[in-house]
Image 1 (spheres, helix red, strand yellow):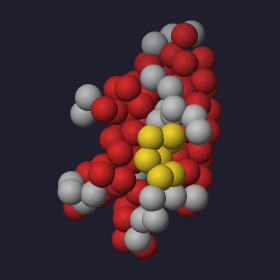
Image 2 (tube, rainbow, N blue to C red; image 1 turned 30 degrees about the vertical axis):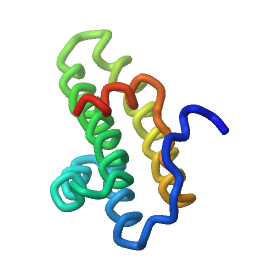
Image 3 (tube, rainbow, N blue to C red; image 1 turned 180 degrees about the vertical axis):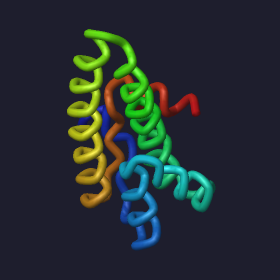
Length: 108
């Protein structure tokens, strides 16, 4: 089993639905506030929060001429792909730690 899969368990419907919110932009704040005691939800909410912060940062880089537009396009695609992977990992009941983002999320 890969080291990046840190948690696998049978999560209840509430836990899974809260974990799904984690990868839907600003909605990541809902599971962060409502499910503080659930480690499965907290794991996904932290990763989702880092993705959301990255998306917000990408929007602000649009103000920079040249590089901003390129960074925004790359970031939008990367965040979309990582959000889809996060949602799929929730649907199968796993917690896959994203490279680099997972390390930052643990510090939240």
